[in-house]
Image (cartoon, rainbow over all chains, first blue to last red; front, top):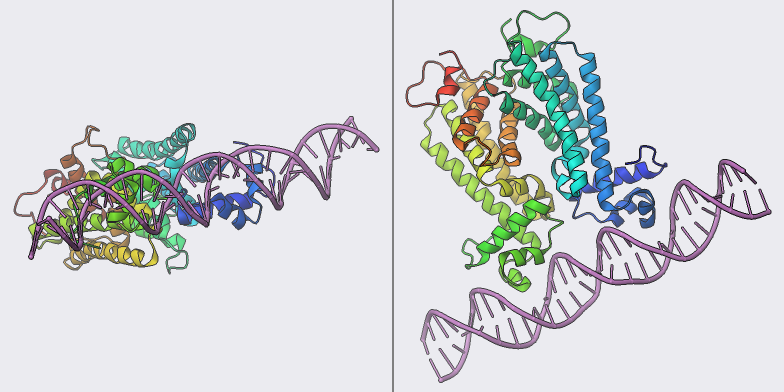
Length: 213
Length: 213
DNA sequence: CGTCGAACTGATCGAGCGTTCAGCAGTCTA
DNA sequence: TAGACTGCTGAACGCTCGATCAGTTCGACG
């Protein structure tokens, strides 16, 4: 993938993203994409090698953004595994809520990639999974996460965060901040977080108050 | 939808189910489906009105089965909300693990239905959601579920159960019984189940032992 | 035996698909 | 001013798509 694309291809990526999310990869024609982007069919081929490459570019760009969001969140978090898990959950929920169509494409259309692209995509996905794995393992080691099923708890956390893309609507009466607070709380519940002692620093009230501290 | 279909259409439904799950609705041709089912293209039209009707039949059949499984599970469970939630989670996990391709179609391809079919599908989905909603509400009323976020906990439970279809492999070293036990335990953790007193009757050990009773 | 409907076939339709290609206006560089 | 490059166009390619339809086989029924 090129890192420096000429201008105009952004409209193309955005149009393709919306069409793929609405109709699905196989049911979307590149003519519809080009029309939505306001360019000719041939211009599409000027920027991308074809329909499949367009899909791959969308998925890869999404991975870039998500990875960057997670890295930023983790960099701002401290060493505490609970804090780091909170950071990851917040980043994930915000990404899924803010990039809903990108997310639903990621979750379903990776099967339409070719072998090479799919390997690349899966590798990046595995890296994202490992971030959660490491944090959960850390919490277990330090004795502040008590879940007997760390793998399943991790999968459950990711599944519930990912599902946000499928139902959350920004105008639905639930602010993003509230949503994040709830999911952070649910994630800590899932790993059965028991803090060593009352934590210093600012924290969401709901999440800790309920732990009886 | 007809309840009494002529014989031979089962092979068709099965072939379509596999193709849709593997490639996606839009990327699957009815010729491929017919070939996989071992019949001619025209025979497909003898049984179903077209590609879309085939998809609808698959989704509807899946809903029938899932509904039946849940009803059976609830009928065998007692009045206790925890027991009923366990029954629903077990039924859902078993369905998702046993009907993986059907499940992934349900989760992604409902957008390819026409307006009328989609309304029908969503109505049935809402009914399934309500089963979980009722059980959780019951547990809250009785004071044995303590979660401050019942709606989100319910969505989280469903999301983690549904995700089973995307990763579970029967030959992966994890038995279905173990999987069910884990997810039941995680679900009870999510709703913050606190039993009134040691429960009578047979129960999975892991789920209750960890509650410190 | 005759007829009727269910199950199914093979040929064929027009539309739309992804992709290709020759060409052109504008801009930058030598 | 020549040449190269970027960004783009419109027309066309061969092919596959979902769908249609006249026709055939065949067992059941009267």
